[in-house]
View (cartoon, rainbow, N blue to C red):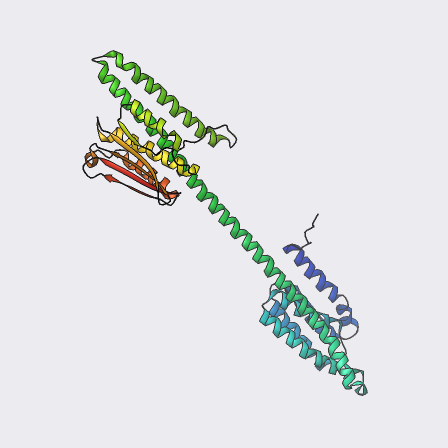
Length: 383
């Protein structure tokens, strides 16, 4: 298995800096007490600022560099505390920006030359030759270059990791937004399905019940067929509602196929049985289209016939036409009823649901009073 790299937390980083500073101070304090108080104090000044190297890398480097620059004025020998300088360079390259890192590296390279001259002069003037000077300068400069390189790599890697984390968070937010939008769309779809099923079933039941009540006063025998239609419509509506609720409860719930264009004749037969004269203009055979287009076409006819029963008035005839033209299915439902004079209770919600269905397929829906009277709904759904 791939193991994650070991990392220090904020508390671990603080203890690491304390331990590093304490380790570097181990020879500095005895040196100050027993060898040379001035050099010992200088060593302490060079080392102690490293405690703050992560939070204030530039300021720490400035203090360490200044203390290191003072050293040639006090003695000509290297000090243990000069290890603090490459650590300060690393801290600037790691925790500050690239410009400050470049300044620190340039300062270190200049300081390497100065330190080489100072140390060779301390060892003896005869050792101050070009060969020795080059060797010492390159050796000291290597500490600076390595520290700068490691710090820059650490900063670059951290920036890369931060970018990955930010991208992951952004993708997570986008996924959550997409899920929320999908949930809203699914609620809208379910609402449309529920409206179409309930509106169609209840409209048929109400129309049949009103007709049976009015006819029963003159001929009680006509109530039998009406009650049969009411019972059949109610059972069908309940079955569809159960199928939809089954989809909501479990993805693997058994379901019946969704209505298709082949189910339109049965739908028109139900409308005729409910007392609405229907003229069908359907092609033979009905076109083969995708499930989504078929369901949308079926629901438009179903909702439009429900509106005819509710608003067109008694004795109105509905004409249902389905045809394929110019790469689209055209569904048109027209009646010869009251048209614009019909009350608008409930029709707006049904038309809104139809429009949402058609818009989901990139189609168009027009509705309104028809020329010569009545009301017309025409949907054009791209294939």
